[in-house]
Length: 142
Image (cartoon, rainbow, N blue to C red; front, side, top):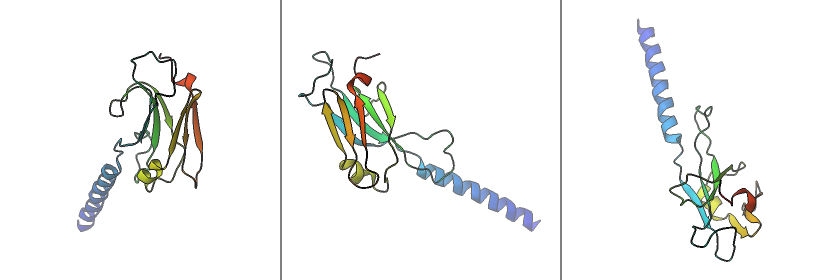
């Protein structure tokens, strides 16, 4: 009888531990970078319309990523919505990056706006990359 109680205790303890680790690892949706289209760069926007924004935020979990510890994923949003009201626009997953210190990493990221599109340049180091999205992919509406 004692061994059965010990087995249940281990199972319940393991389940509670997994649940706590899962909750602690749950993505916050935290916005780590916002860049607004400068007035010097014009797209096909009508006067008076909100400028485009690049927002990098912690992404939601994928359906199969339920085994802790959960890896942090980040996504790029490009559209006209405010950083806290994202609904419609272009969403891209960021390539793997050193997310041990995401605030420092994204603070060092450059966003370069041009009439041809928007370019995100990762900080120097590993991995170094540039992500370019042509203006035709995020302007013009539906």
